[in-house]
Amino acid sequence: MIIHIGLWVLLLASFLCLYRISVGPTAPDRTVAIDILGTLIVGFVCLYAVSRRQDFYINIALAWALLSFIGTVALAKYLEGRKFHE
Amino acid sequence: MSETIGAILISIGLAFDFVGTVGLVRFPDLYNRLQAATKCVTLGTATLLVGAAVYNGLSALAVKALLCAAFILLTSPVAAHAIARGAHISGVRLWPGSTGDAYLHQREEQELDHAKTETT
Picture 1 (cartoon, rainbow over the protein chains, first blue to last red):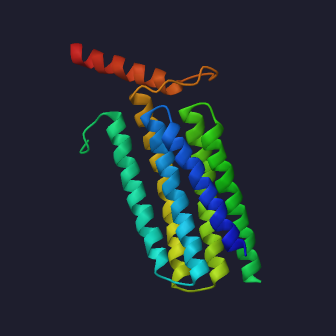
Picture 2 (cartoon, rainbow over the protein chains, first blue to last red):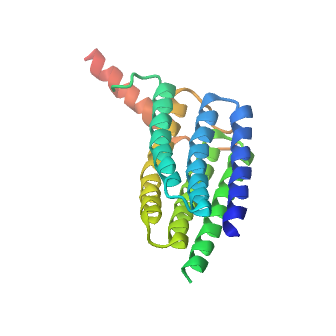
């Protein structure tokens, strides 16, 4: 029961993040919202794996956490205006 | 018993997640939004993953969920720090109601030192 409520709550939170991505005045605002959305999706996929009782969905959550971190750091470096090897 | 504890942990995590995203929408400034959303959502998702592991019992899913929680607790503050630094350097101004900007003074001092070493 709590799992299904949780899926809907995380969906609502993701839509709040999408609102910030669409209206955010500057590029760093959108970067923050994308980072938060990635973290929310990790929790969503984990709850979905528990609700479906399928183990392999959690692998998606792990891969998403890794890729979200790398993407956010790359975007932050791009905002800083430096090359990636510095 | 473990399902009850897991459900309580999942509820706490969901509350933190939702409050963090409301802060992401409502706060006036990039830096306010960053600190509200990052701290709340990091703790909330880590609690949610631990709760899912407890709810499910000992299995491969629980171990991977705990691994995921540890990874998020390690990397999310690093990403937030990188974003704040990049935003400040790329020229995002603070909200007018802010009381101070310590990083700006630090950067000015660093640039002065850099100029001194270049002239001498």
